[in-house]
Amino acid sequence: MDRIRIRGGNRLNGTIPISGAKNAALPLMIVSLLSPGTLTLSNVPRLADVRLLQRILQNHGIDITVAGKRAGQTGMGDVMHLSAKDIVDTTAPYDLVSRMRASFWVLGPLLARCGEAKVSLPGGCAIGTRPVDMHLMAMEKLGATIEIENGYVIASAKKGLKGAHIVFDKVTVGATHAALMAAVLANGDTIIENAASEPEIGDVAECLVKMGARIEGIHTSTLRIKGVTSLKGAEHSVIPDRIETGTYAMCAGMAGGDVLLKDANANHLGAVIDVMQRAGVDVEVRNDGLRIHRNGAALEPVRVDTEPFPGFPTDCQAQLMAMMTMANGTSIIRETIFENRFMHVQELARLGSDIHLHGDTAEVRGVKKLTGAPVMATDLRASVSLVIAGLAAAGETMISRVYHLDRGFETLEEKLSNCGADVARISG
Ligand code: EPZ
Figure 1: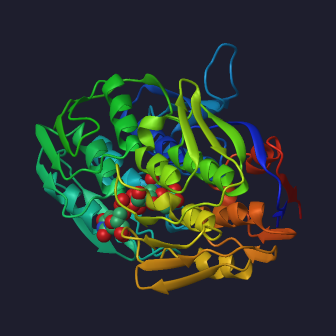
Figure 2: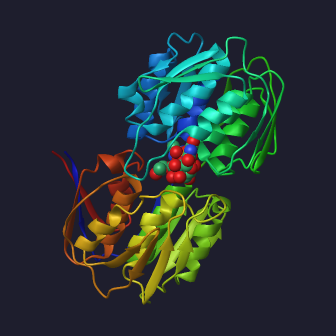
């Protein structure tokens, strides 16, 4: 199994190109189930999760071809053509869904297009229990009958889905995606209230509109959908990854230096930029991306709660915690989205951090020095927090189980070493 070796202490200087967003690319690929036409996605990041979803969708009968970048094309990712002319299988099996939760989201489109779906319940995961009750509530509101049998959700809507009024009692990205994807082909009007307004949902909605869907209120918490009978193919470019952007911003904040995060979209990063500035990092919004700059001055501690968009994202919580381990005082970081997203704390402790957990809140007491050690990646964002800490730790940090990192960060070691970091992948 590959490992990542970091020798800390180098400042970062240069340019890091930001990839297409994993959490937009995955639902966009799933959207292809809704149409017999070809959906062409560009700026698709080259990630393990994307490859796994490709296999899952191929299992349903989607024909997928992937080509590299063409001349004149913007973005750095792949171009992917997805064509769901015939859906040959409406079952998403346990061995695939348990490996990637987002694959559960095929439930809505399969129901909408085929009137039936059998999708394995995803099970627990490292960051919390993550139930799917709100997904099922939304499908039932849209007229599906749902049964749970042998670990599978068996959903049926033989006469098609019907428009409905769906109100979520908690903001949920996944169930908003599912409800939106199902409602676009339902018969009649749907209103989704307290919808998640994460940029990735807006990106999916904009792609659906290109395919012929009728959606109002995109980028707000109330989505109004007029169902149509069919959708056509379209071309769409995946938005830049705001979590990858926040992560590299914190790498630069931790290591010091001057880095341009090329193609980053500042409009998706208001809360992250605010926290970086409060911590004493210079952030300049430019036409071509975000410039992050920090001279030798110590970081200032911050107080942050994770929240749904536009608040500070839970997917940047571990990275912020790593950056605050060497701040000039005590930071308070509260995780409000997932109940168990502090797996990184024990590993950061191995590098010499001083973090105390009180329920959903971490008290991060800044230390003068971190020292390198062998550590273990536990989930995607937790593992990149170890990279951030390793960039400033004295000596060598060796991160094992980096397959977690490969799920969501494209060529991480290359992007960082191009800016002067001493980061290498050790194969085998
Ligand atoms: C999405 O997960 C993201 N995944 C996560 O990113 C992200 O952390 C999360 O949204 C929050 O922003 C993808 O986009 C692929 P939720 P999702 O439904 O949709 C509870 C990463 O690192 N809930 O918004 O699964 C749930 O348990 C990943 O890239 C219910 O109670 O998250 C959580 O506490 C990790 N019932 C809260 O809602 C439900 O039916 C928000 O979850 C659904 C969710």
